[in-house]
Amino acid sequence: MSEEIYGKLAQAVVDGEPEDAEEIAQDALDKGLDPLACINEGLSPGIDRVGELFATGEYYLPDLIMGGDAMKAALTILEPALTGDQGRDILARVVLGTVEGDLHEIGKTLVGTMLTANGFQVTDIGVDKTSADFIDAVRQSGATLIGASALLTTTMLQQQKLIEALEEAGLREQVKVMIGGAPVTETWAEQIGADGYAEDAISAVAEAKRLASA
Ligand code: B1M
Image (cartoon, rainbow, N blue to C red):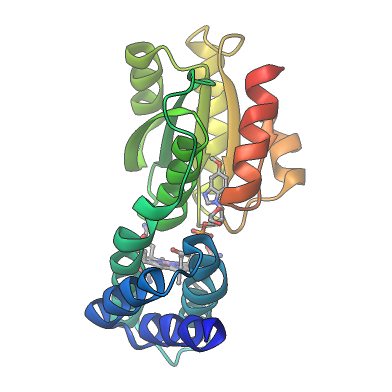
């Protein structure tokens, strides 16, 4: 049964059908399926397929937008069901955002959900955020960790600029920087002097915990 529902979730994303995606996600929860498995086994393969079809020219920008909207619609149902320990001490304050010039929000938001569910206090500043936006948010929230997401090879450079801006602002010693996003690699993280890198939302939690206790 679960494989069938994962397949339906993936198909709703490929078809760009937000209402179907929402309904299937609710049905999955009603049937007791694990929300994280629904994301990893259903929605993610679906959005990856959308990306492939876009890359090969079979899908156009509106299809990309509808695929993203369908995934977001399902996530509004699944994310609140991702459980975490409530009422614990805060592990660390985190400022999370997608870097300047980059409008991709789904992965970043998922990372934020997982961090929140695991005891971090997350200030999600949104997408297309400049280094100055990250720095302002750090000053306002007292965060000791920044999470910077980039989905485009062109905007990865903004992660490097963010680290340079933190140095210029005299904040580099106080704030750890974790980076991620589909084109980002551990090698890139090392190259730009980031403190941490995570491939997905699950490993982002482990990496943030490592950085918070370092
Ligand atoms: Co865009 N887009 N897009 N897009 N888009 C990609 C990234 C692309 C690979 C598609 C393709 O060509 N195959 C390609 C990038 C090519 C490149 O740079 N090499 C691309 C392109 C080209 C573009 C435009 C330029 C298209 C155009 O206008 N011609 C344009 C750029 C706009 C801009 O940002 N300035 C554009 C626009 C869009 C939409 C806005 C339409 C839409 C986003 C909607 C939204 O976010 N609300 C969109 C989408 C949906 C995609 C794909 C299909 C899916 C992205 C996604 O949400 N994945 C994507 C192809 C793909 O990645 N398969 C594509 C699901 C999400 C859960 O995964 O974001 O990877 P992801 O996040 C993961 C990990 O990466 C990691 O954890 C997450 C969860 O596991 N992670 C972190 C992410 N951030 C992290 C931070 C961390 C740690 C881990 O620490 C801080």
